[in-house]
Length: 266
Length: 266
Image 1 (spheres, chains in turn purple, blue):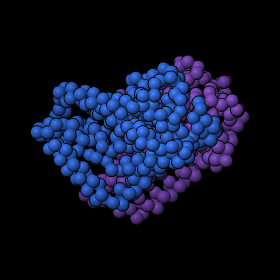
Image 2 (cartoon, chains in turn brown, red):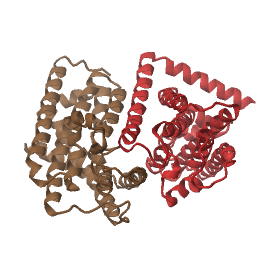
Image 3 (cartoon, helix red, strand yellow):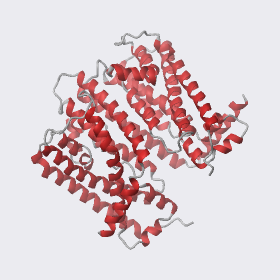
Image 4 (cartoon, chains in turn red, green):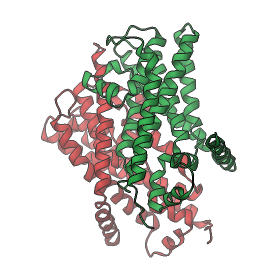
């Protein structure tokens, strides 16, 4: 356990170094968030029928999702994937620790450090914007706490999915196609593009039970107070259950694959 | 004329080399198709929930969507060399290009021409045709010309943005996401008729990055809608020229960048 903690710490500190990339990222996410908010404004302005969530909650939802973008499992660990492509992954097998857990520890750092760098400035700006397009504060301290707890749950789901992406590279060397498809699915079904409450009711019945809703939708709805605090146990239990399933799934595929691994020589 | 011949040669080589890996080419194109389809699903979700946006129904918005995605996919394909230009600078390969007795623009363009974008192109076409069919638009020669002009203008505008993005790498070798947000964010924003946006945001899209000019004004003419913003209808006809002018200006800025270039020395 100690080894894994120190891996997380080392990678975390390393990833904190990419500050210019973070600034560029903040700008991009701010622009995208603004476009989404503008579109939502147009839609809410053209209807008078009641919506599953009100406009201000939807806007806050958008900003939360943009801020937490770095935590979405939209890609794999580039270094691991390049190790697999070059065949250097053999060195990883020699290390005296569990390969899956080692990669998971790296995923932890990958999903937290850049997100922290980007989200704090982004949230600050979004909170300062005029009320029509800005983010609102959570209604009470409990909503904020529930957001923190469920964000951690989202992190667990995200890291286990990231690791599955890493592992799929072992199956198809380029891995690019699957990864892009997966990232498109993750962004849409997590509520990143369109808040999940706005989806057609029939689709919601399915989407609410997929792991992707645990990534963006659940934390964002706790933040806006759309989900009451007393549901916290149920929803974080849901997240933990999915994280466990994905953990076991990833671990299973990896140990199976490692047995008949053929390394590209060179 | 000699340059045209050379460009065609580059084109032929690029197509041949990409078709060497047929299976991978087909997979990647299909992947691209599915990804853009998922984006379209996001649009559908919003219209399913809200019904319409400021007087535009889903089928009408699909026309805007189709035009933008066709224009962008063409631009992405033929200016791919500029898109990956930062790599050339980082590796010092741009020095080689400077030594050859041809313009840098031609060589960078010829460096990579992506055929894979055919996935997005196809999807854009399908959406466009579906929208025209559903709306029962009386198709005339005038409308064909407007449509072609709009796609061409949009293509040159996006190409210009990609060239500008590449030009930035003369000043910083760090990969810059900032302009990326103008291209991808621009696609996002121009997917909808700009009349839905707030006036200040709309003005950015008309005067600063003239995305709206290449897409909104011609599309309004094609739809036979009365412009809600009281801009004259003939604007639809000059839009391709605005896109082209933007492209020429960005090539000039590129030239300035080339003169400013100092090798990384690796």
